[in-house]
Amino acid sequence: MLSVCALQLALYTRCELNIRTTANLLLAYAADRQECRPFLQQYFCATVRLPSDWVDVAEQYQVWCQSSYLVYLVSFSALVLLAGRQEEHLAAKN
Image (cartoon, rainbow, N blue to C red; front, side, top):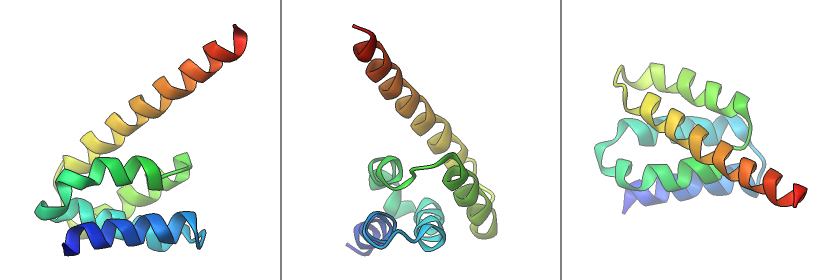
């Protein structure tokens, strides 16, 4: 329950309050927590809006842990984001 709450708080902080640093810190904390990982991908893609957010989350994550899980998550979310934008670009051309 607490894991989902932290991720929802990160999403709310970024989208509604427009506070980037706190949202990125909460994402980094959630990436370090084993119980948050099943939900992290969904909230990560929704919360991270700028490439600088990816960098900030990674820097914050280095404070918490040395695991490579966040590297996987960032690269996967980048692929999902780029694929979505490519589909939008192709749809705009047609």
